[in-house]
Image (cartoon, rainbow, N blue to C red; front, side, top):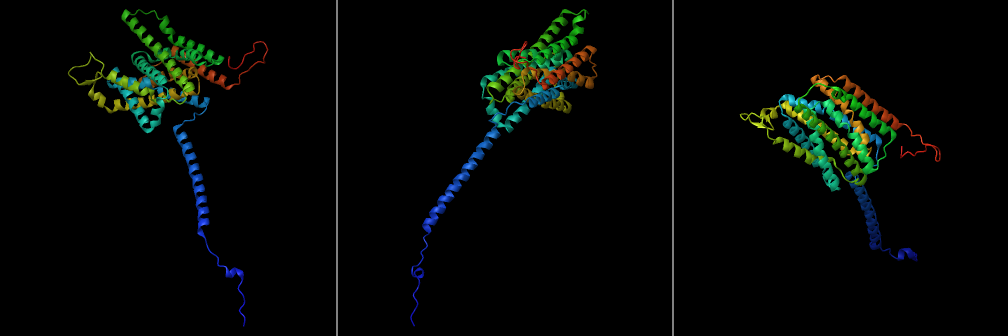
Length: 385
């Protein structure tokens, strides 16, 4: 029997060559790996930029107003807390020292948790130095006038800060001054005059030392208001011309400096037989009530520092200062609730006018601005209103 012939397919053995397959697979794997690593690198860079907050968010008026109001609400109990520490038995220098040592401690914790803020603080060295100097003047002036003078009158003298903020913003930053803000400034000055009217028309005799001391206190309050206006201008200038700078920690060196200076100020009235620190017995420093009051005041001050540092990036300095006038209403209220000091009718009337001024200013800001047609009589643009 003849054997059938095998097909050509069976006659030629199939050889498996893994080299071309391996080469193709390796090339595809490398290409896929490179694409994955490239995508990962892009995501990592995007995350790093978001974490560092490199791209600045656009200004938000709502956020700026929220920060300004938050700062005012938090700083309003300051005078009440300072007087409470004074009532415990602490001297003026001890109160100032404990308060700002607490602020320095909290800001140090912020720097430790967010080290990127330390690096961004030195992005613009001129702004940082100006902010440090302003914070030194502002912190000392605010504390002294609240402890040594009538809180309501001192705060209303400091309330001239919107005028300084508006003037400096107009000259240095070119911030427009709308009609509503101009009227708000006028009515705020009228409110200050209402509160100070009893002192102006008071003809009761006073000694030369009392008159001189009162003049120095008023000058300190006015200078504090000017320092506050300059502070708003510095922070807003940094937000416009150095957006990468973060001046939140600018209060840290000023707080340390004030705390150390007040801690070692000489005290002639101190009892040499009792161990004292800043003219205050050590037992007062160790008391729980004094430490809790100092720490609570420091927390509120740090929140206000945060608001002052970031609110001017979103709204003008004059608007921030106008919102700050609410402290003139809230601070005497806290003092009344704690110590029973009833504000005078002049103070209540001036505070009511300030509140109405702020409400009217914000209502006017929410309404659309009427602009006449070009060429018509009295034509004005939005920018020069």
